[in-house]
Image (cartoon, rainbow, N blue to C red):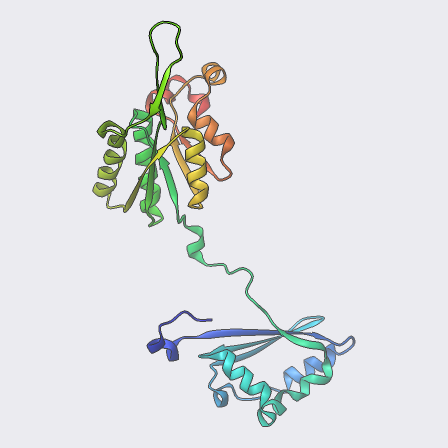
Length: 263
């Protein structure tokens, strides 16, 4: 159905597609029926178009106009009007069915709707922020910045006693990476959303991206070499392996100089 406001409904064009299977051996009769011309005038029913497409085993009726479903219902249920379509009845096998839309391609679907950009204020994260903003501007979408802080702070104690743990209190320093990203987005004219998350950085970034159905995760790389990355791991590598959606790892300038093969 067409999602126009009530006052504009009469201008709203709708399309209804009805499919029916042809009886075996009726293809030639169907072709002759098509060549005989339209079974009725669409304008008489307030429609703009009425098209019929013929396949080897199927016929497809397309009706287009305002409030098309009600008008087609009137056509089918009115004996005088439906008589003009009666010629098709002997050629059809089974009951005609309304074709419901399963997939609709639109050029806008090629654009990203949600881009999640992870930042921690580091130099590589700033490059990820800059690149993410370029993508958001190109696709005319909102840039969603996330920064993860610890949920718990562990404070070592003197001697051999267990370390003390307490809830991490968010500080101005914690919010600074997001504030900086927000300022850069404002300068670039890109709408931004800022999210401060708590917990494990990898898990929080991946989970949040799933919750907002992100089309892409953009994250910076610390620039560790292959050996260091294998031994110590990195947030970007872990996100790359854990995420169930595309991840773009932006290498910092220094990293590109040190390890060009890993870009």
